[in-house]
Length: 346
Image 1 (spheres, rainbow, N blue to C red):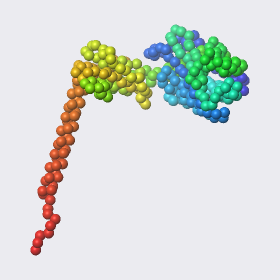
Image 2 (image 1 turned 90 degrees about the vertical axis):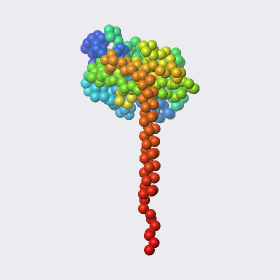
Image 3 (image 1 turned 60 degrees about the horizontal axis):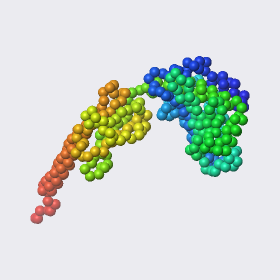
């Protein structure tokens, strides 16, 4: 049935103006831009496989996948890009059939290729764009985390790490007449067009500017006479940000930067720390630069943080003492002023 659909699928996938699409990355997006589809297959035994699929525009997940039906899940209002429902349905059907064949190939040859259950297979498919250059498409297959198979120049190539098993799978895939041409078109034409459509449809969201919030805190003590100064920045978008501990205009080379981590709302969080002697903490500041700040850096001074901390501590202690005194006075006067419970003698 799939082979009867190949001419229609090829007609839908080929763009009328491929050269123009290769070079038309919208203004304001950092290069390179990429779209990738990941799939993880966990083969538990000869009759049970679990799969997880997802689509990513750069580091933003845009699609999910329902493996039983093969249905795409569109996670954002703009996740369909500028493709028609007909094009998306043809792609969905093709990927679902290809997924079934892929799984069946491993099941049918598990004993011959000496795959030992349980095992895991990972696939990565997609394309990357640079302005003025031809798209770079890729398909990679890994077995237990090691390179196994890839698609290059319209044909499958086995990895030396995969040995005879990878070579056997390569020969098997090469027998699927017509699909190599479709995969090539998907990588060189369809994926770049879909990627550009996502950038255009999601431009307002993808190019938004969200200012970071920043604050200071002490970290775990590194040892006697030392301080760990921590600068937090959170809620910023896009991801690129520069944060550094400074003394005046001099960057502190001991600054340690954590990974930039995602928040639930799609913004980012970063923590930058500095281990210093307590006597050297004076005059240090944390400086934050981000595209949303319009060239006006955020500068937080550790001295101010320390002063605020001591003031907050003093206020807290005073309030606790006043509350304790008020409680004591109330109890004392209530006890003195309470009427006697004894009845007068007649």
